[in-house]
Amino acid sequence: MTKVLIIAEHDGSALNPSTAKCVSCAAAIDGAEIDIAVLAADTTGIAAEAAEFEAVSRVLTIERAENEKPITAKLAPQIAAIAGDYSHIMGPSTTFGKDLMPHVAALLGVNQVSDIMTVENSHTFKRPVYAGNAIVTVEAPAGSTVVATVRVASWQAANGGNSATIAPLDAAAELPMHTRYVSLESAASDRPDLQTAARVVAGGRALGSEEQFGLIYQLADALGAGVGASRAAVDAGYCPNELQVGQTGKIIAPDLYIAIGISGAIQHVTGIKDAGTIVAINKDEEAPIFEVADIGMVGDLFQILPELIDAVN
Amino acid sequence: MDKIIVGLKRVVDYNVRVQVKSDGSGVETDGVKMSINPFDEIALEEALRIKESGAATEVVAVSIGTSESQQQLRTGLAMGADRAILVTVDGDIDPLSIARVFKALAEKEGAGLVMLGKQAIDGDNSQVAQMLAALWGRPQATFASGVTIEGDSARVVREVDAGLETVEVDLPAVLSVDLRLNEPRYVKLPDIMKAKKKPLDEVPLTDLGIEPGPVIKELQYAAPEGRQRGVTVDDVAGLVAALKDKGLV
Image (cartoon, rainbow over all chains, first blue to last red):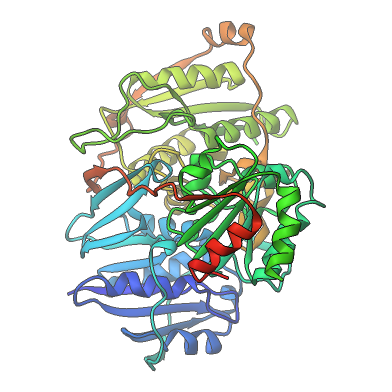
């Protein structure tokens, strides 16, 4: 019997869209019964959102003051304590899930399947390795719990319309005090979230400065798009780290991705492979980004961008 | 703090364009350049800086693999690690077993910090540090882009999806490091000569009392579905027209 427990990702008040992707992945396993666990200080709003997903049986809420911030050392023992009933424990392959799920796996004495792209059957999955340059089919051992992270860019969000049972749960676990949350520094923005935006405009090293990177924001705003960046642009300090797209940043799948002044290193391209349409603007016609671009334009971005912003406006 | 243990994994070099073998059994590694996993090199650099600041007395580089990993450990010694341990295994070993190796060594050495890369660029798993923290019962701070040692604790800035998160962890602790933590030093020729004289001990996995459990089997490797080069447009009008064609603006 396949029973999947999904660990909800949230910011303390609202569900992160990554959870809806996990539900779709779990639902791809034949006959899976799906529960979602919400660990928070106040689970009310988050649990209500989670209960709407099609195919979800129950939403289990674990409310403790210690669950106010996502500290793995505190969350993992609670998840391990309720894992006994499940054949699968899944979380998103976001920094939240990447931090948490291997810790849960080790507490349960199993290895983890990282970054599920497709489900072949209950224990067989496809996942990317070598920055997406190879896809490997893996088989988790039968007879032990499958702990996995879900590559969110590979999955559509689950549909809503459901009203699953919400049940409080007591996860008796002693929680360590050795890890303490201090702060989160986040560049507040009204723009669409990079990981879920339908359109993304991204800038690279060729923007040349933080000030000139402003052109990327202007085009993004004209298109109602989220903003991304190459590692080079982040390293150079043109924009904050959370905008980085690629193997070590965010893996995204927008309908439209516009890469501006980005050469297209393998490590960057692996982050956008699932995009619907890729547009590349670069002055170097040999740039590898053109090999994966559906629409390419060779030229000086400082001439093209103002014109393009005007045209879109 | 007395000792810092740093993990160094031997991987296909960052610049190699990886090819899947025609029989799907893995990727081509014959005649391919091998290096220290870049994230691990950053972990070593940070450990060396902590030692140089006076907050630690010894940096021990550890690798788990075949005797070929000696090469990466020698590079680590040339960078400045004081000694190295190679835990020898035949073939591949799973992340949970690797975490058990680090736990055994951390306890034996009395390490104040175990520092690892946030992921290895071959398997892209990102598991060992988190697993080690679970098995060892010590704090984890993953994806670190800033580390400050403050007596018996460390303040760590973490690169998370929402921005930069700061946590405080008691030592001993496990850190996994991200790209922007530092820029690793270049190795100088005299250091390479000196590194040849530094101790490099080999310990068979079985001597640590670790028997790998059930692993996640790799059934088949395949090349990813490629994207095709599309059209080229000459001007902004052409670009906007192409986007309109696809219903994107």
